[in-house]
Amino acid sequence: MKHVRNFGIVALLALGVWALPGGNTAANLFGAALFVVVTVGIGLLGARFYIERRSDLYALGDWWRLLLYGAVGVIVLDMAATPKLFDSGGGTILWIVLLAASLFALLQVFRHSREY
Image (cartoon, rainbow, N blue to C red):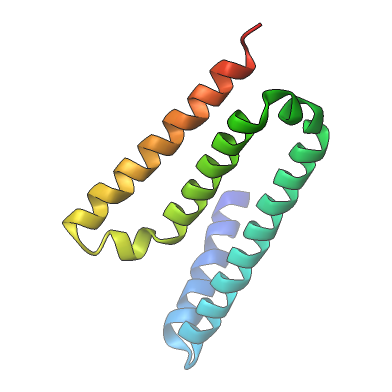
């Protein structure tokens, strides 16, 4: 019964966004605020992981740390550019190549970190 009530609440809110004037603007504002909250949360999580694993990162060495940070940076830029890259076929291929290369670099850094 609780699920039916929750579904009704969500349906009522969706009806308000659809029917009320300015509902689309309010939905866009809520979506943007939610995006900011999630992005800040991911940033804080990354900062916490960095603080907890700082000695492991420094133990990698300069080259492997550069590869790690570069791969993470390319993934972030790739995700940010997704809508523009998906507008064309070449952009989609570039998106896939960048993501695959970054994931491969992360895998290599991980494998290096597990070597003795």
